[in-house]
Length: 265
Image (cartoon, rainbow, N blue to C red; front, top):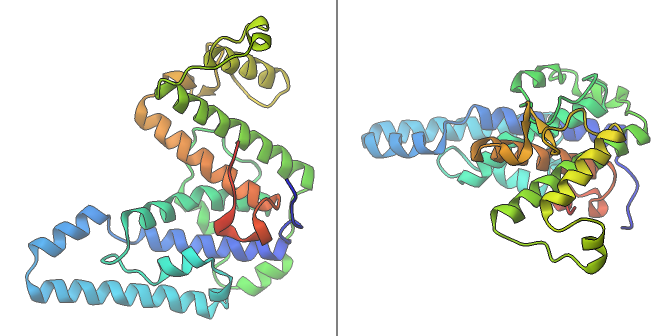
């Protein structure tokens, strides 16, 4: 794949501040079901008051981005989200914004605000965003420095590997059967589980995986295949966010446009 130049340290710092603001806005927005319940159960006066309050929060969010001189650096989807309130935003918009804390964690690591990325399966705590400067944004952007390219690329490769595992489980869940050619069968690969087992052992040997469980990727002491649906959903979403952010850092996005970052495996 032909790639552009990698984002500069200053561009990464700007993107991190944007993500921090996006996540904080999402965290302070009532869950969609609660909003629907409030609007249905309240009288007209209460509904009007709630709508006005949510519009004030929206305006404050937009004002914050403009004050930081980052409004034009937001992606089209982020600006669309920033124009929505708790009443008008979609479930998808709020969910996507909340998950961006995982992408923000990757950028924090790249900017050396975090020493390491947690193991896959470890949820990012929104509290980490407090380490992102919120006052002297200009100074933070100017002084930003990135990790070495080979460190970032290694993290990207690992994220892609975990994303591949997620998609492999999805194929198995959907009942898809491996269409193995004679060469694969001769090598002992007759199913997706065979490929997963080989890949897990090889990745552990190369030091890419810290643990494997029952010849599978280890997640909190469990084999990936044994994760419950809700556990798998979380690990899959977290993996996608990391892969997305790391692909952007490695210049996989056309023109470095955040919204267009691909996550093919």
